[in-house]
Length: 497
Ligand code: BES
Ligand code: MN
Ligand code: ZN
Image (cartoon, rainbow, N blue to C red; front, top):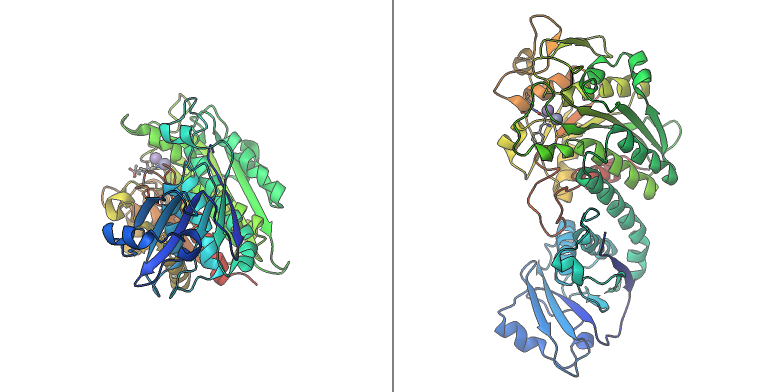
């Protein structure tokens, strides 16, 4: 990252030079005006600029000589009384976007008359700023214009609020969340030549620094376990597969763990059923599920969440060499169920089948949630504003949908049922790996369901949300890190303490 903020909180601040950002709600006064604008230039500027305080509206004023600040930014918060956690995130992001190449200190006055600014709100604002600052430019030897102008050392930001002391305490949680989201984004953004299954497993192993237990299974060990579905996908690549098992034990020893499973196809060429060339480079992101699970485990460990959580990621590359799996092959999964391969490009479900079975069998978790960039069909159905949710459990679904609303990593539940399940019956084996043209996301989910027994389970199809989704205030990067904040919120709201 070439650009960073160094954010602190304070109950009060004097402004001398630099940028002052003043929050304002519709129908409310401007926060901090008395301190940052003793010359009283705001009134005029707001009238002439027709600035009312609409959510995310920004008024940018170069202050005249003699003013306390060199530049004053008024930031709209929307209607006082209806500002959500996500609004604070976006407000932070919008402010950050405006001051990304500021080379002087930034003072932000949040305590707007009529608005309840909690410590959580201030911390969310700070998180929004950091999320906006993220960019993936490790591989650029020449910086973009914008980045070139950015100062080399972190820009000092002071958020002024009465809740400063509490906000400071929450900042370690904010750091944890940002760290997990950025880890997930980095993993998805990294090129596939530098992030194969082995390298990804190494990244998972690094979570040991945070106190996560990490085990890595090799090909040989997976063979012994009978993971024929996962191994069939891997066999066309010269790069060997890995299964990473991450354990965060923050709860009581007797607490049943909760489990998250991720699809980690480091590159999906389609295999022998090879994909068309256009856009194939995007398939470096086909490990977005595994990235989200790894990012989540980072967050839980970094904020010392009081929960026992398992993360399992199946890491393979789907390639078409002379040893590659063929359409027509029949493989035996760890569950003992046999699978006829119809299309080698429906590989994610094969990887997950063994990962889910292994997880259930070994850990007997309270529930399993898997994340996967599983089908193009989910993008046809939902675009990039909702991930598909499939589940055998209404209670778990409700909790996930609620976490989706509060983080705005939104989910939309799609159906499962016997009729759909029948579509993957095979003439030759227990099932086939595709179910025909229609309902492609649903038949993929039905396939996974055959590997979870009666354990409460949810499948999130994040093909449309993990990467390439429209950028916004809190994400300017190709990879969004979708799922990290969602699942952290799910855990926080329901499964701790
Ligand atoms: N990784 C793809 C799904 C995907 C597509 C993710 C676009 C992100 C963006 C998956 O492995 C795949 O190829 N699915 C096929 C399934 C089909 C062969 C039944 C698809 O969606 O076309
Ligand atoms: Mn595929
Ligand atoms: Zn895939």
